[in-house]
Length: 160
Image (cartoon, rainbow, N blue to C red; front, side):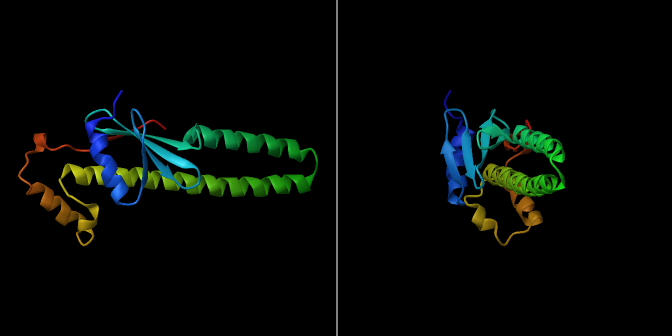
């Protein structure tokens, strides 16, 4: 299935703001640090996002890591307090790492959604709006001359 026109128009905009975007047969994959990625799908009128930590979906990865560390903590309690302290430290470090990865992927989703919304109101570059406030941007969209049914709005649906 070929990539949709909305995603084909979105890809150069994302690359112009410095995001690493890989075009896949049915979606765009935005590559992020910490082995994270966000896949962007389009169903014609709205965008759908799937987040991944490595090759595993984000929520499943977090739950597997939580389960694994919990099992390790229960097993280490048998061997003494020293091992349990080490596992506790591992759990804290793992939680911090997952927290950072969740923030990175959420930021990427917000950024893609914003850039897609700016494309819908015909702003050639998101950098043009650097001095604008939100109210000025909304006023400029209202004066664009397009009626509400003619405008394309970005709606987000996520399957986390």
